[in-house]
Amino acid sequence: MVAVTAVLVTSMSAPRPARAEPGPVAGGADTVTALIVRVAEADQRLQQLGAQIQDRQEGVNKAIAEVQTARDAADMARRDVETSQRAVREANTAIATAQQRFDTFAVATYVNGPSDSYLSAASPEDVIGAAGAGQTLQISFEKTKADLARARTAAVNEESSARAARQRADEAAARARTSMDAAVTTLSETQQQFGAQQAEVDRVAEQRRTVQARLDAARTWSTSSRTATGTGVSNVLTAAADWDRATPHDPADMTSAGIGQWDTTLPMVPSANVAGDAVAIINMVLQISSTSAQLTADLGRKFLTSIGILPQASAAADPGITNGRIPRVYGRQASEYVIRRAMSQLGVPYSWGGGNANGPSNGIDQGAGTVGFDCSGLYLYAFAGVGIKLDHYSGSQYNAGRKIPSSQMRRGDLIFYGPNASQHEAMYLGDGTMLEAPYTGSTVKISPVRTSGMTPYVTRLIEY
Image 1 (cartoon, rainbow, N blue to C red):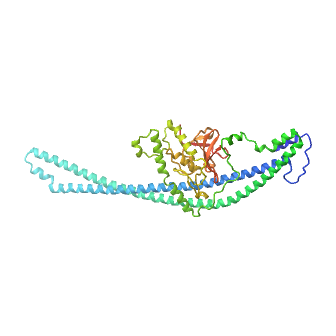
Image 2: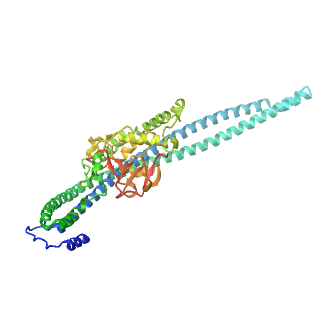
């Protein structure tokens, strides 16, 4: 701004016209510059508020994802208990069988006694035969004793494993309850914060509207003054007053491509009327996503079969989850399929917490009644099409693949924003554009790539 003022002073050959109009509207480029700065400050504050809102939203998503992970671990621990209990029953059965054989041999040995065989032998051959039979009986008896000992040892080990499995199950269940409590707390605090943030957004937005109106009026005054000042000075004044409107590229190109700028002017705060009961909300979201993993596996098997690397005959036995399993030779095909699947959702409303492997779903905010996607839900859906299973949380998706410097991003990579990818994500489409579900009140759309707040790395889930 100092440089702009200096240019104005040195370039003006005639005295500046007197300021006939009082108040902040009068004042030409100096006033315009000051008002531009105030508008920019308001924009920056609104952008900060928008980032805070996104951070809180993804924080709730993270808490819910952790509940799901803890519940999955608890289910696995319960299955381990069932497996251990079954092993204990089998060990006890083996003990009973071995004990029965041992008792049979013991009775036979006691009743028949090997000494009688030697006394009653009629020839040396009979003596040798009796000795061989006795030796065989003794070997069998010893083996039966060893089998019984092994069965008892196995039973003790299985009992120990069962106790450890029960302990793990109890701990997993406790972690699931703790995660649920933490998620409820996070959601409840977020509801309260959204109320306070809405008031702040309204205040800053109104302040911005007021300053913008004054800026428009000042620009009108400045335009009329340029005509009276002269052509040379008018050009300098025009450049100074309109410096904030300059862009490094032709905005018409973006408009013609149907690509809109990300409007950070007025971030939408999710409604705090999230149906009141945080427990009910979280359970609803978990219920909606409960079939997502199975569907992802089914889609993975279908994709692997379609490209010919999974025989139809063995498809049913394949786990279907393809994270890290897609061969490079099929990587580009898989990546383009994911992109087409994501692009098919253009225009679908943003819904915080919405989206699973099956498509758009009811979310958490006022979007509890809106079927749509949030940023991480959109890519959970897109990558599920090739069997890649993702958590419904941007921070988790950031760590789901290989990190690539953002300067080397290519089509299909995921772009992340905020500390530890905690605020937002999008998919790079090439040519400086990305696909995103940006915020409440918006839709899935194509936007220019924003570098502000971007993490230094993008994530590549499919290699080619």
